[in-house]
Structures are given as structure tokens and as C-alpha cells.
Image (cartoon, rainbow, N blue to C red; front, side, top):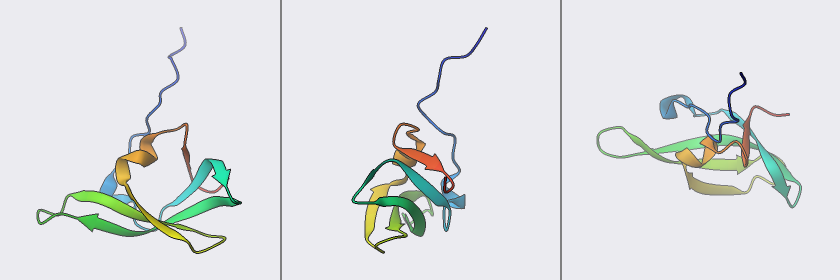
Length: 78
């Protein structure tokens, strides 16, 4: 019996720095991204990340949990 497709990827937020990501639906040719910074609270828990587009060098801050959505993000550069 096959398992239903999951909509989340299991991630360790502390290992995201410098990880590579591919947008499932690129906008303005921005397909490949790199996690360039982690934003943590006083206890060291990761709250957000900075994603940088490889092509344009544009950066945006997002909640790290957004990377768990397999409909928007794929691990690695494909």
C-alpha cells in the first residue's frame, strides 16, 4: 500500500545555513536560492532565514518553516 504524498519536508533549522534550495515555481528567473543567514531568538531557536537568489542576489527574509512546503521548495539545486 502506498503512502500519501506529504506536503512537508523534515528539516533541522540549525543546519539550514548555506543550504541550497530550488523554487518549485520560479518568478523572474529566480530558481536557485541559498540560505545566507539564520535569525535566532535569545535561546538560540531559529525563527527565520534569509534566502538569497543566486541569479540576482536579491534577498528576502522568510520563516524557515516555509521551506518544509514541498509544493514551493525542493532541497538542493535541480
